[in-house]
Image (cartoon, one colour):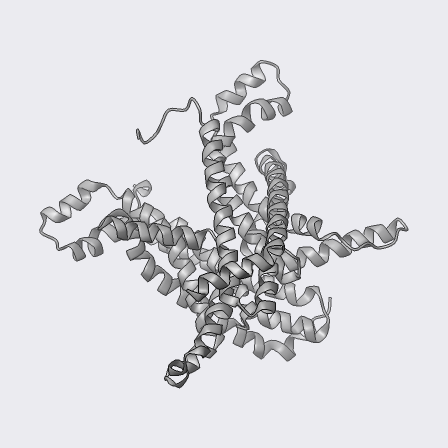
Length: 238
Length: 231
């Protein structure tokens, strides 16, 4: 069939570009995911233990981020973030810089991810039985140590399904960066499609690559889940 | 902040608003209609059909909507002109407009996400309730309509609300294939006036309101549906 041979030929010619795009996508997804977990952990702790004003501002953060389209947020954070940094640089008398694409992508998607992670982690933290953390306090652990040694590991198995879901969203969300002109998999595909005039073939290749990322991630998260829930009783008896 | 462009573009924003609402409601409606059989065949019926449905869900949930949209619009859209019979048919005006492609792409995506949710929902309905219905001599269709579907929906209404919000928030993607909703008009304003933040903030505000209304509507629906925790 012409379609299959065309696809193989296109992949052969544009292979390095697809590979570069895939690496950029994975890089940004991983970076922003970790940033999202960091923001989410801080946000969840703030939402549970924080004072009134902190809780209120975190509520606004999660509500606005979760209620506004990602595309709009990405543009807003991208422009606002880079002009804020340059404003700060000007303030201390330095020349404005052009913000590195990967860093911008990581920050933009990380801030969006952070809002969702906050809710996932908060839900998991709230579900930890209180006597487990009480035991830590009774042993004279500091609050930070209680969090690091007890709350965080106890929360992981509860938060993991939600976190796995967010990783899938994260990898797919990087495609939106194509709209601001960042060279990741989606934009590379569009360029290859436009230049070769083989639209169907190029986007099929991209679909396959994204699907492979998702399927591989599924396997990895299954393994992590197995590890974090070791020793837990099985719920469904299967 | 400069807002003097707003009256000039007000009527375009109203048009864009309707495009957004139409695209969203059509894809949600058709997507949900597809999601019911997609969920159902994964729980009951022939095994091969269930496998196809599961594969469909994996494929469309595992790839970005943006790529699906471009695959349909640029990919299939570039194939159709090669068939002279299509060019002369009455469907040609539909095949060259962008809006139908957006509806189809969004519908397929909604069907995959909600089909996955519905499969779990159908599975979670206790077996004895279905047996009770069968004992009353219900046909398979009325069993589905009177017991299985309402009971399944009752369990997953909050999840479906979340999916609906995600769908609403992905509507701006359609502007990349020239379907200009609220976001598309906002982009137009940005190009015309060279303003960076104001049009984006305005679009964000409209979407925030729409999300709020949607969440409220689903909350109202949830309150109307009796649930076990309300006893």
